[in-house]
Structures are given as C-alpha cells and as structure tokens.
Length: 89
Image 1 (cartoon, rainbow, N blue to C red):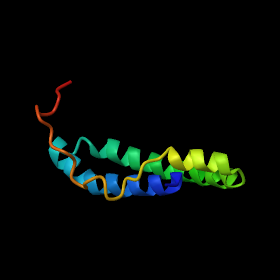
Image 2: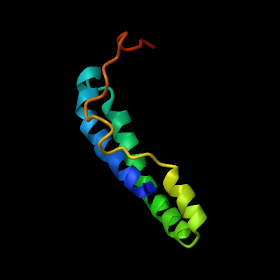
Image 3: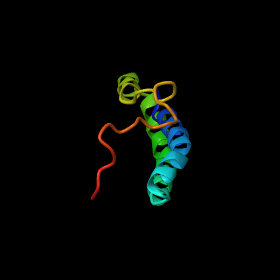
Image 4: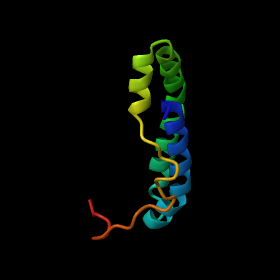
C-alpha cells in the first residue's frame, strides 16, 4: 500500500463520514472535518515525494509500503456507533 493511496482513501472516507458527523454534532464538526481533509490533501505532495525517493532503494520502498494499512474495504463510510454515548467536555 502506498502512502499516497492511503491518503486518497482516507480523504474519500472522511468525506463520506463528514455529513454523519455534522448531523451528530449539529454542524459543529464541519470545521474539524474540513481541516482534516484539507491537511490530508496538503500531505499528498510530501507522500509522492517520499514514494519517488524510496523507489530507488528497494528496502526503503518496502518499509514505506508496509507502514500504511489499506483503508478501502476495511472502513465503513458510516462511523461505528458509540457504546456509551458521546463524551461531554
């Protein structure tokens, strides 16, 4: 799994979950969700750079690829339900 693929998948997952979190929080989570997705997008150039640099070194490439787990197919667009309810701060 490449770093950039991992980021693309997390962006897609967080976009799918954003409306659910917004409904659950009365819209208060939108700023945080948008910030998270924006930071993931901003990380893509660095991920691609690292992948290009690692491609010349098989051991580094293997380490980089093994550092990220697949998101697609493992996570539901709907977040898991909380068992004890949301926490209050």
